[in-house]
Image (cartoon, rainbow, N blue to C red; front, side, top):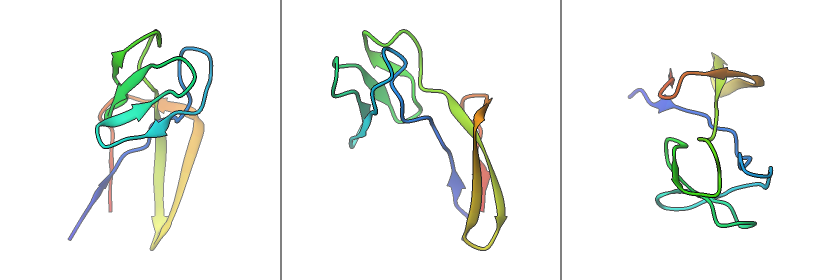
Length: 79
């Protein structure tokens, strides 16, 4: 079967802390921001959503993620 992959930046938009994955999305351990699985802000102080990153499937199990290229929320790669 095919799977859809999505990639969000794991850095809090508040002050740049590394977010931790949870069952419901991501939590920032530094100042308490919470993000949904799609990166949207559930609870501040984060001022904006986690950005989505461009990912390309190179074939087989090989992918490349461009941390410098943001894509619209909801963008996925089907493999």
